[in-house]
Length: 117
Image (cartoon, rainbow, N blue to C red):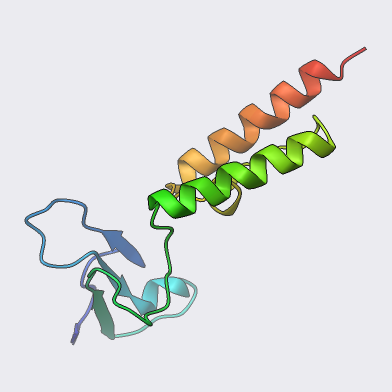
């Protein structure tokens, strides 16, 4: 998609409503706000279920995967009670970044509280 001026006013807008035909729209000129451009280029991202052989960009928490994750947790806890799983990769979940940050801060606070004094 190409157009004049400013198409959406932001680098990325996520569309979470089920009626939206796409997942997000990227408008590249906003990634470098110190530059000035008369025209704009944007593209839309469409979601779909991953097929066999497709790269997986987000975790799909299938029963087999959850059991593997739980096994990792048990093994880590058997070695040390100081192992923490957090964030998208650590929890094997898709999380919005505000949730990732909140979880990281909560984990740090719990750690500091447990190790104070």
